Amino acid sequence: MDWIQILSALFLGAMLVFLFPRMKHAVKESPKGSAQDWMGVIVPLLLVVGFVLLLMSMV
Image 1 (cartoon, rainbow, N blue to C red):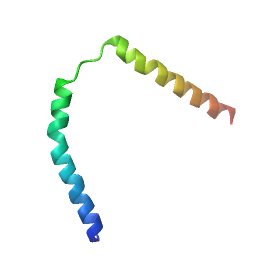
Image 2: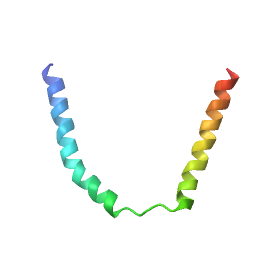
Image 3: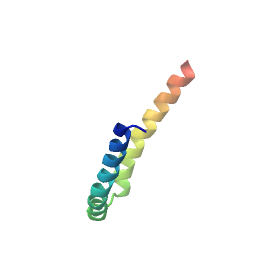
């Protein structure tokens, strides 16, 4: 391991240490999604997956 990889690993560890408390607070204070919110995410996602499958079947 050279010193760049060691510094990168230390930076990644420090970033996780500093971001974890903020992430925990954000998850606790975030609004909960309703069924309508989830359908607004699932329908376009299924359309994209269906389109990709269509493209794959055409090849």
